[in-house]
Image 1 (cartoon, rainbow over the protein chains, first blue to last red):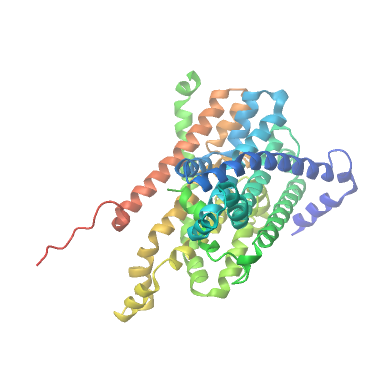
Image 2: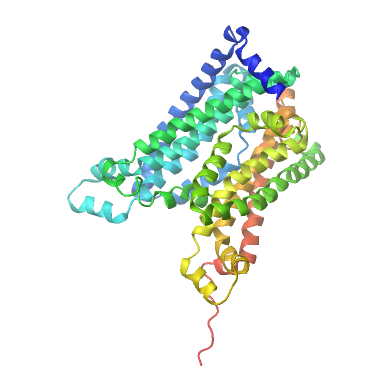
Length: 242
Length: 220
């Protein structure tokens, strides 16, 4: 337990506030997470909606998600940094984070639409909605909780992988962990790890709240969630393996 | 491609080591997740607590878990046992939910029929529920296997050798082929184990083969 106290002492020592200190490291980590998440969402959400709405390309999306799971994130970062060049480390790492986050968000987007009762969508068409109205007024609101659950996985993947970016000298909280290992300064390593864990848990909590809030009023009454959401939420994981 | 040809021996040795490091968490994870998943399935109140707690463990980034775990276990950060323990925790986190879902998916009528035929609880679980839950459990196991094999590579950052050695070594020596071969070999290993599990599932659970009609009994 004394190691734990030493880690806390390291975390809260005044030296941790200046340049290269904890606020800066957290800022770097969050900045990379935010950029990568925004880019990945901008690519994956429209694609996922296209797959979910038309039902086309589902097999491709499932295959991509399955293959991405096998992709070693650390190797991908190093590979991209070497390919793009050491001068563009930031761009290379961001690209790696985006690539790793896309499958989860994509799966969330199309699974959200797929999990909607087909009769609801047929009814929307029957009352004269255009395809665009079906998508924006029925499918997107009803699919929102599952999309957010996919985004939650994507963000956690980004936070975890951004930790590894410390190895290529990009800063972030991984920098403290790896520096601690190299210098055999275990309190520093543990302190950095505790911060990463806290960051991941906070982001996870934020998305957990968003998922609850996102359930539309009309379907919230019975049991508080979408009737089929429990079976649907495991669809991406279970089907990705096929 | 010269580099790969010249270092085929090293790559192969690392792949074997990689496989050894990943099989243990996959097998251990399943063994631990089975009773936990059963508890979550059988007793509703435990489900929320158990699966939420495991879900939170799963949100911990791998490098952070590798270096923070020794505080709890007392194992050295740099030892293989530490990495294996961390990966087992991830495996249990995914697999327990999959086992609970799998057991939930068994038709309650079938369960009642088994009880009516005189199966005891223990026998009913192994002879009826476990096999019927097999396909969903296998899907979870395949997810665990593939993600474990990918995660083992992070172990090189705490000094545990696997195909991840090719990443750091290749990066330091600026040999692109070395890093690339590490990525490709890791993915191949994952796909290979996934394929083996899928084939094993087909062999052990012949009733999941869709498209091959069950042999019909000859009409009297």
